[in-house]
Length: 365
Image 1 (cartoon, one colour):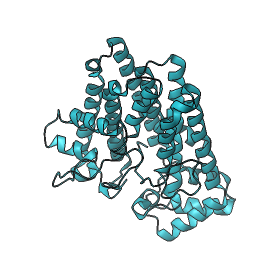
Image 2 (cartoon, helix red, strand yellow; image 1 turned 180 degrees about the horizontal axis):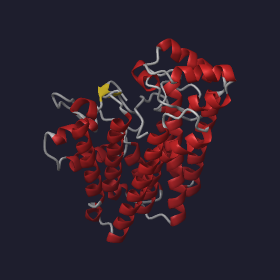
Image 3 (cartoon, one colour; image 1 turned 60 degrees about the vertical axis):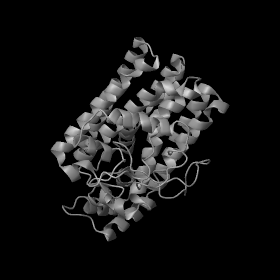
Image 4 (cartoon, one colour; image 1 turned 135 degrees about the horizontal axis):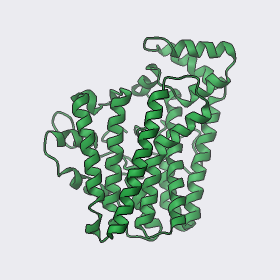
């Protein structure tokens, strides 16, 4: 999202959001400048040159997923704050390293850390975020959690992190392959965008005292919520994207609409797409319009929309199955907002999505 813009309904004025932001700042305060300045910049708290505070940070989806899940199962969300902060710091670590790996120079009108400070310092800053995430999680005993529970939280987070690294490895190895199947590509999206979100929901259920079946249901809900948001982002790359996001497509970044169109377009239009995306130069705006038109005609938008709606429904159903309709309200609103925030308009979104939410750059995906 544009820094300084509101992020309703999950910005700083919502329950737990302010407490989560304070927990994050307390965790980052352990570091010293200038490294700490880079981390504050990555977290959306400060301008690069002046370190002046920005008006509002981006939504903290992973931390809020953890806190709201803990509360939904009857737990005290304040006891889960260190874990929520740790998960959010882990997400920022992944996002920072992902920007380096994928060569992303800018997100939402701000230079990425590696582009501003160089890749070596950015890698170091990312590693620092990872350490801060671990330290935050290991501070859970101060909230009255037993060593057994804390160990289980740390285990789940480490398992999710390893799974995410494996998914990112596969993505980096195959991202320039235009002949992937849409099904395999979607599996990769879910692994990259849903793994840590599923972990956040599972950890929230654990800290709230829910049973193992609820842990499983919430883990699936988080994964599907992450997938739905990522699918919305894949659509926004091609259709109605703001000018600042054109670079993803112009640099020939593979997306689901493109993969689907290559698998289903007539031979002549497939050749046109391959010609556009195989060129050894930046793709021109006119070529982007031609490519987007071909993707539309092949049904790529309808396909992506259907998958996004299905993943959203699966997430909402799993949440309601775990805690019932009355306790599911806030979590369901969170999931729907996550999806809307990836799109520049509300056109074609799942029914019930709140309006008035700003758009934010996605996770590691």
